[in-house]
Image 1 (tube, helix red, strand yellow):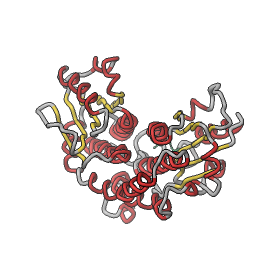
Image 2: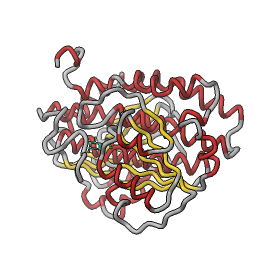
Image 3: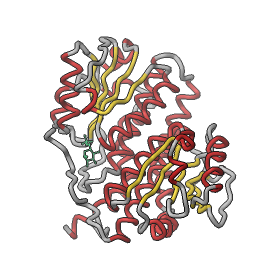
Length: 369
Ligand code: G6P
């Protein structure tokens, strides 16, 4: 084990730090074409992706959070209606089939029973277009899907998914961009700019990893709390969900995520000095709205832990702990904001001495229902 860990204490830590490489490898083929090329999803992808009129994305766990981010990307970049759904719900509900929909399944392992069954269910309802985004080339899910994109995270050993998630997000952003291009919504200049931004993604993640010592200080303050609330808006709401899931999974702290605009519809009642509130505050169009949500937390004596961008124009205060990522990264922002939340969960778990790589009661892949 020691040799495989290569100097890291846990697989999870190693996998968090492997993300720049995992992202670079996942992007390798896409960037080699010099344009946003549909063939990265399969030889016939261009025809299929041009023909579809909607997208339904199905997954479990962390992969479902990737699906939720993709819903925002696909609707805003490509202008195509998109749903994200938990596999165990989709497979048993009476949904209305649409043969022109693209069914996208996302899975690290490609063996999750519910996700696989959901894809089979979709096909039985008459869906003919399917795409799987998967980290396991030989898996059952990949075999069942018409189109595929293989993420190149490499083996993920830690039960709590890290590099698999950020590589899934990267694949899904490529999907949104390719769909947008096929629909004539992306100019040649924009295409070049998107490809340039993607080329810089691994280096940007490296920058964010340098924040680890600051995150460790947050983890020391939070590790022995009973509960935590995670807030985000828009693209970063699912990232708040992923941050809460990571903390729950490995540090056993009860954590819940809310879209910040929903605060006053319930969770504000829980806010006091014992409830740390983690907020994702990128410098995007929703920042001012988020800031006023955060004022409401402060007014109730809540302690804020804010992940902002360099240009978010926020100040640290006694009750506001602030960590600044580099400048706002546009569409890539959710990928970058994920990393400090992974580190936060990791360091909170270290403080508590839990089994980081094998949290109690959880399995790496859930191959039975
Ligand atoms: C388990 C793992 C999670 C993972 C989920 C879905 O719950 O512990 O980390 O997100 O399964 O797995 P998949 O392989 O389908 O992405």
